Length: 76
Image (cartoon, rainbow, N blue to C red; front, side, top):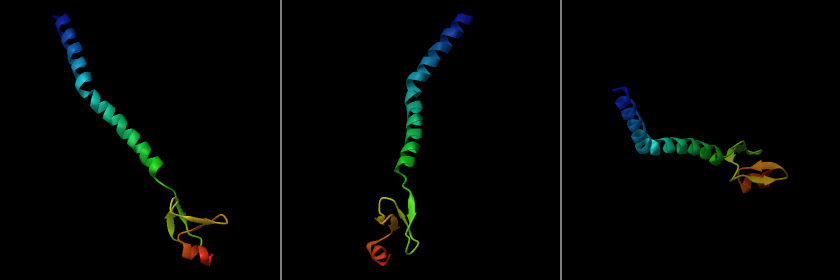
């Protein structure tokens, strides 16, 4: 009788692993998504003329100073 319960438990375990394997992978992908968000998130830098914060991919740099636009860059 105990062997039947053990065999049934093993079968249920394998069925669970087969059908819910995708969810465990998906939850792993969610953590990878969080890591991607960290990688995709950009630093914000402050314009030295007007104080506006701009993402590091859109900033203008001149003489080591950050500017939000060409207008601020010409003023600075």
